[in-house]
Structures are given as structure tokens and as C-alpha cells.
View (cartoon, rainbow, N blue to C red):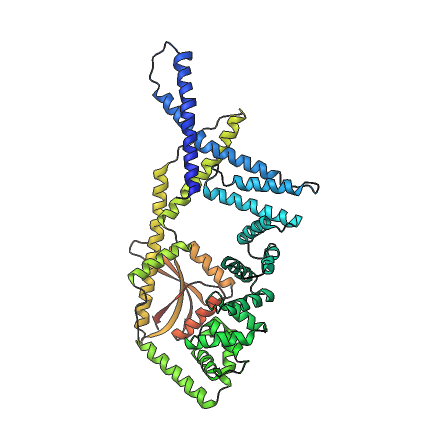
Length: 501
């Protein structure tokens, strides 16, 4: 639990306790000693009512009043006149920014309001042309909130003129700027390339900088090649960065050129990048065609033999732990939801409704207009509804995984001569409406051969399975699936082998 959360809780509890001691004591004193001095009755109900009222004003009303203060303060900055004193406006922005750290807001809600203030604050600082240290800090916060096409990039780049070595945080900031701008700033690229070269710093973080520098024909390109190339060849790397670096390094005469050509040519023969990066595959082909005929023939034969030997070896890819980890990742990426996720959504909806009604009640109370009745939250109903939705999602995910295992068994039985036709299964639904919607979407994208297969479950429900095409071999099916994935037409698939009728 963070310091901000603890501060929020302690202040709200303290305010509620203060109201109980003051308001509660004087209310009971007035009833027993002033209003009804001679009456004897049980005041338990009155005590509970006072307790609820104090908790309400200590926790909820305090926060709603604080939020109203925030919006009133931000309304002043909606249309700032040109004659306004910049120092006064900046002071007002800073005061509102500091207010978002107060106990009037929970940490998450305060952060959202703070982000709103930061963006408007940075726009005003940019308008008045401030570039001092405090303005740089606001520019940095605004840039980190929205790095793509950010107008705060230019003032932040002034850190290049400070002189001396950059700190690790400043280097990371420049890398983020370059990444957001898709490495289009040659000056920063060359600056960082020289900096990393002098520090002999070669990591995954610095790889794109060195590659961009030699692609831009930097003055230090030859030094970069002499520094990076031996390290890549030592590890026999053939990934995307390494191949791109090899292709650029061939422009310089180096003793390692034959070894570089060998790695690039083998990458072409393997065909790994043909569907993933056609441009890189084509460049590797040009290097391969530059070899003599016998060398090319021997290399192709060796690659084919290695493929045949690898097909004999079959391994079980997923273990039980892997399947559990995959399920957790699916929940993290939003592909599926956990029971807690469904429960949080329902609680959030109820709290949002409760907040609106409470805010209306508080504002109406202070204006003496009307009273609004607060409804009790039906907690068990929310839990039950969330549990049913969670169980439905889990059953669907379990059956899809079972079908994937069955398709894997079909792949292991690929030596059977009976299996002739192969098809791609891209989804399965228990709802006809969802299945029909996906089919129409695929057809609108120009995909032919989309069809639906219905299978019946033991429980009586029906699976609507969406499949695409009929192929003579698994390799052709896999190539077609790779094309669909590269076009973002589908996300997942598995191959089903069917006997010819």
C-alpha cells in the first residue's frame, strides 16, 4: 500500500472520527437534554444514523467536494486571456497540480486528474515560450504521457547542448524520442551512436541506434562496423538486426566478408524471413545469387537435409506449467478475463452509479433543493453474475485448448496416407451470431473458402467452428495462414487434417 493511499485512509478516518465526536455528541445531547428532557427511550437507531451520516461526510462527501474544487479551478484555465500575467497563470497551474496529490482523491483518480492538468500546463508553457528547469520537467511529464507526434519533443532535445556525458535516464529519454519518431532524427542517432561507441556499449537497447547510424552513412560507420561485426559473428547471430547489419557491412572491405556472406546466404535458403520480412529475404537472395553455382547447390542440399531430419523429431511443446502461464498471459493481455476481472467490472459499474447519485445528493443537500435516496448494493447478486460469466469463459477456453490438442495429435499422425485434405480453423463460438459476424468480416476482407462446421457437445450445445480453405499439404496451408496473419486478417489458427470422402 502506497504512502498516498495510507494518507487518504487516515485523513478520511480522522475526519469521520472528528464528526462522530463533535456532531454525534452534540446531537445526542440536544435530543436528551434540550428537545426531550423528560423522555426515556432507546436511541440505538439514532446512534447508527449519526454513525452512517458521519462516515458518509467523512469519506464520500469530502472527496466529492474536493473534485468540485478541482473542476472549478480548471475552469479558470479554459480561456486564458492574452493580457494575463504568465507567472500568475503558471502559479495557478502548479497549485492545481499540487492539489491532485492531496487526500481528496484516491491515488488512481488523482493520477488521472493530474495527467489532465499536466497536458494543459505543458501547452500553456509552450505557448509562452518557457524553457527553464521547471518547464522542462512539465514537458517531460507531458511527453511521457503522449510520446507520439509530441510537440514537447523540441524543448526536450535541448539537453543535447548541455555538454558532458548524458545520464542513463537522459539516454533512455532520447531512445524513447527516437522510437516514437521511428528513428528519423539523424542528428540524435549519430550523437548516440558515437556516445555508445566510445563507451563500448553494445546491448539490445543500442542495436537500433548503430544500425540506423550506418544506414544513414554516418562518418563513424566504419568504426561501428569494426566494433559490432566481430561480436555478431562470434555468436553466429542470424536474427533480423544481425542480417540487416551484415548486409550494410558488406559495403566495407573486411576479412570477415566471406563468413558474412555465408550466414546471409544460409538465412535465405532457410526461408525464415520470406513471410515475415519479404524485403530482408530479397536482399539475402541477392547475396546468395552472388555465390558460385556449386556453393549454392551444396548449401541448398544441406538445408533440405537438415529440414528432413528435424521433421522426424517431434516434441511436446506445452507442459502443464506452460499452459498455466499462457492462461495468465491471456488474462494480462485482455484476451480473456479472470473471475476477479469480471467482479471488478461489475463493482466498477455499481460504484460509478453510486458516485453519480451521491454527488447529486451532496450538491442538492448543500443547495437545500432535495434529498435523494441511496440504494443498497446487492453484493451477492454481483458475485453470482460475475461467477457465471467467468465459468462460461473458462469452459469455452478449455474446449478450445482441447481442440488444439486434438489438432496437435492429428499433426503427429501426419504419416497416415488417409489424410489428404488440410484446412485452417481460426475460431470457434457457441453463439451463431458471433460466428456469422466473423464469417461476414472475413469475406469482406476478400478471403475465399470461408465455411462453418457445426459440432454437437454432450451437454446439447453446438460449437460453430470457422474454417478457411482446403489444401493439399500442411505447408501450403501454413503459408496461406502466414499471409493472413501478416495482413492482420486473423490472429490465431491451427491446421486440421481431414480424410478425403
